[in-house]
Structures are given as C-alpha cells and as structure tokens.
Length: 256
Ligand code: NAD
Image (cartoon, rainbow, N blue to C red; front, side, top):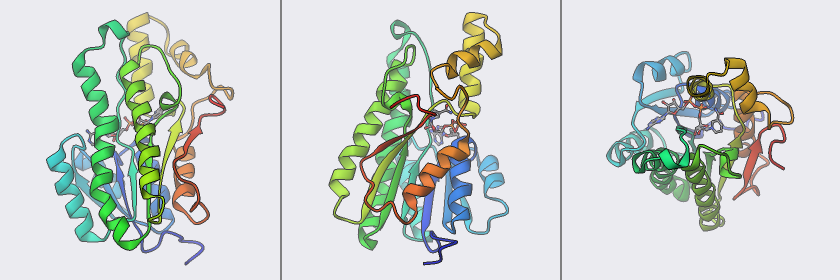
C-alpha cells in the first residue's frame, strides 16, 4: 500500500457530493488516491466538483428514488467494484411538532434513512465479494440527542444511527465496517437555510440566529466541512479496521 495514497485502487461512492460536507469528503478521499463516483441531483454542480480530477465521475441520481438508485449503483459498479460508500445526502426541515405533517416526516425519512438503506444494499455485494468495505453514514448530533422543532429530522437521524449499528453487526465478520459520523452545526448551505428560517420566523438578526445554533457547542463555532471529512477519511483509511458500529460526534464537544 502506498502510504501517501492509502485508498489507491479503491472506489468510493459519495452521495450528495456536489457541495457542503459531501464535496469536502469527495475531495479528501480523492486526495487519498480513491477513484470517486459523485452522486447527486444537480449535474452541473456535480461536474464542477468532479472537474480537475480524472479519477472522479459524476452520476445524476435522486437517492430517494429506488429505481434511480439501482441504475446509478449499477453504473458505479460497472466502472469498478464499490469499496467505500459515504451516505451523505440529507436534508433538514423544521417545524413545531404540531405543524409537522405526515409529508414532512416521510420526506425526512426518505432522504435521511431510506436512501442510506438502499444505497448500502446496492453497494454491499461488491464489498462482500472483495472482503473489504467501508460504509460511513453522515448522521448528525441530532441522531444522538433531541432538539426542538426538528422532530422528523431527529427521528430520521436516530434511525440512521440505529441502522448503522445493526448493519455493523451483520457485516462484522466480512471485512466491512459501518459507522456514523455525527456533525454538529456545520458551515454549509443547510445551516445557512436554517439561519434564514429562524430570521424569517422570529424576526431575529442573522447573527442572533447563528448564535442560537452554536450556543450549545462548547467551542462556540460552526464545524468546518473539512473537519467532518477528516473523520470520514480516518474511518476509511488504514488503522480503523476495528472501528465499527460507532457514532462519532464531530461537534466541538456538544455531545459527550
Ligand atoms: P447541503 O444541503 O449543503 O448538502 C446536502 C447534499 O445532499 C446536497 O448536495 C443535496 O443536493 C444532496 N441531496 C439532498 N437530497 C438529495 C436527494 N434526494 N438525492 C440526491 N442528493 C440529495 O448540506 P450539508 O450540510 O453538506 O449536509 C450533508 C449531510 O450532513 C446531510 O446528511 C446532513 O443532514 C448532515 N448534517 C449537516 C449538518 C450541518 O449543520 N450542515 C449537521 C449535521 C448533519
């Protein structure tokens, strides 16, 4: 193994890879030598992210659509067996519980849980065949503790952590590890949208809204997407073979 490029010869599929945390993970794994397949809905944004890396390929897919997932993963497998799957695509909608509709609950479960479930099912055969695999689910600290006004999101991310633990047990003797990385509030469009929602709904200023989000983080700051990517890189790199079924917070100590 090339110590500089420990993922050379490995194929990593990253969902929601066109921006934010997913883009940071794609860049990090590519820097470790991985061939990457970037999955997302926005072709132009995906191609922008893939440009400049001849080992990166963009595949357009809405991960909440089971037929599209089958097609996208067949395309990815055709390129090369899948060794690493990063289930990063996700979304966070907020509402007081009494105003949380069935439709919102279904949307949150579809993208934050169902998509990871199906993508893992599509990627696993390659991993079993080669006897090596890494699955990392990007959950959230909202997968480890409760927060108000995001019941559907919190429920879906808790379910994602439960799925991680169960699949880790089932694959433990197959050379495959399954872990969750749980970021605190991270500097991406998702948080910028949350700030905008707080401003619109409460009339607070942007900095007050941001303060509201980061006040639970002992480091009193947003996490950087690259910090989440570093945790993922460690889980996918050499030296993390015995780490499975874990939900690792990257959150400045917000959860202990
Ligand atoms: P983001 O909104 O910037 O990026 C999310 C990505 O997922 C986008 O590229 C989006 O297009 C993609 N995506 C969403 N739905 C999709 C679908 N149906 N099919 C394909 N792609 C889809 O958000 P982010 O902050 O980078 O979030 C990445 C992950 O990290 C999410 O799972 C999110 O829940 C989680 N997370 C984010 C934060 C945060 O504060 N930003 C905190 C904890 C967890």
